[in-house]
Image 1 (cartoon, rainbow, N blue to C red):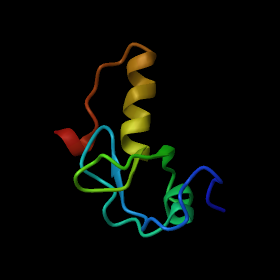
Image 2 (tube, rainbow, N blue to C red):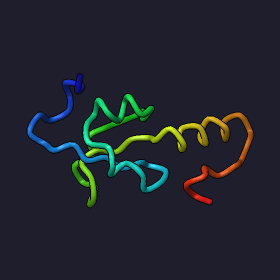
Image 3 (cartoon, rainbow, N blue to C red):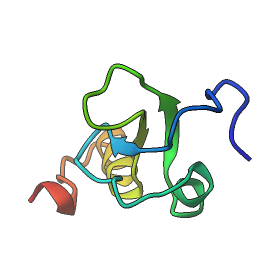
Image 4 (cartoon, helix red, strand yellow):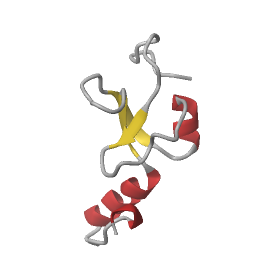
Length: 76
């Protein structure tokens, strides 16, 4: 179910705030099922309507918070 604060008339297109992933995700539900988090409507982005955090970048962020500074595989 799409959050109520998302506009119903905007096509779902997604990009990750940490990498360029997400364009293959076709819906909010598919993004959640794939492990995406922190998905927000971002109408000012040039390439997508929504910004989120992919599972790889989320793991990298969690590792950084634990003191590990290993870049995500998508940024190697």
